Amino acid sequence: MWVRSASQQDLEIVSNMLTETWHDTYDQIYGREKVAELTSQWHSVPALKQRLNKPRSEFIICDDGAEIGAMAYASQIDNETTMLHQLYVRPSTQGQGLGEKLLIEVEACFPDVRKIRLEVEEANDRAMKFYERNGFKKVGTSPDCGVKGSGIPAVIMEKVIW
Image (cartoon, rainbow, N blue to C red):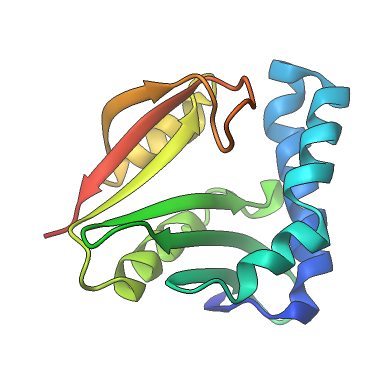
């Protein structure tokens, strides 16, 4: 798998991958209905399309030519911080190093920032451990992961990159 910028032609596949990944990860936490509601709002093709050309952002995927195995979306929020809004790996490709590849690429895309910040659902132990293994530290919490009013409790993590 190689890392490349996402294109408009990828959005339907990415949307389906995100839906699959969210159901695999969050159905046991929030229930199938709630996960379906959130993915239809956050991971629809129109929602993803808005991210493609946002200034000071990167929307990247891991692709082997037959399947998109992972995606990440990050944007620079100020002179020293990049926010990693999304990093998801398809369940069938987890454990193959795709998440690490995307993190390395996100760091390279924003060479002038000092740190990368993210929010991770506090009940997602696997993601928490992944980010800790990759140098992220807990710096706070939020009652609303992703968007204000989501009601999803999150841990805020940061990694200082220089």
